[in-house]
Image (cartoon, rainbow, N blue to C red):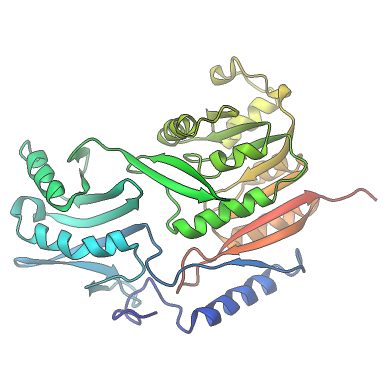
Amino acid sequence: MNCIHFGECGSCVLGGSYEEQKALKIAKISADFSEFYDGELEFFTSSEKNYRIRAEFGIWHDKYDICYTMHARQKGRKIFINECPKVAKPIAKLMPDVLKNLQSNEMLKTRLFGVEFLACTSGVLLTLLYHKKLDENFQNELKVFANKLNITALARSRGQKILSDELSLIDELEIDKKIYKLSLSENAFTQPNKAVNEKMISWARGCVQNSSDLLELYCGHGNFTIPLSSCFTRVLATEISKSSILNATKNYELNNINNVLFLRMSADELMSAFKKEREFNRLREIDLDEFNFSHILVDPPRAGLSQSVINFIKNYQNIIYISCNPDTLKENLLELCKTHQVVKFAIFDQFANTHHIECGVLLRVKPRN
């Protein structure tokens, strides 16, 4: 990693050439998952730098000066940073200008403890995090600051949120030579490595054969849902977050898609609906029995799938499992492979120069003897 802070910073800790890093990650996954899969692992590479479209930094105050901080390798310590080669180019270009303009603005600088960047096709959103109440003059100052940098700025304090201007975040993904537009909210979860995200979605599309309908759990704002919709007759996608479902619905309209139904339901609520244990107003005009699900897609949080969800998805012929945590994926496969077998396994290198590994697994129900 060609970074002046490498060795001190606690973020990028994996040294060696990128080919060595790739070999290390393949060897680890091959060994850890040998009982489930002995075929060839697909490995989707990342750029070694400028790959992160999301970045968060602390702010350190030293009398009249401020600077960016990151967690150090040494637990409990911070380091001061001047650059971060892994962030996307628009963020890297902005970082010194943001600091310079904050430095000369007492209102915006005081009690500021952190900043977050999000870069997308429509521009950059900068979020400023405060330990103070934001008064009535704050928005005007924030607007001047944002206009000078040609960004959208958002200030957050406890119970307060102030925007420099109307928020309109639109990103574009190119999947299999087609452009998809995605509307994002300021707190939406977005895959941090855009290029690898595109490869991940394309891989998931390649898992679809002999399809009818898709059931998706943990759909977020439709990152997988929208590009996969053309592979299926109909899609039923669920998510517990209200803001994510609102964005997913916008994305449905942005891309002129007409075969997706988004529902704000937890996995447990959906399972209860399928079992007809209770009625839901959100399902008043929906007959779940009309769907013919050939595939189910799950992209759970780091904790993986609960036992109840595992028991539920075992009922489906094809399972596409996107995992951000190999440890919980392995635990889940111990149960899922009692009824299914792994037929495809991919590694997505979302975070170059780190030990972090994300995986994709396609499972199909085992043939009856």
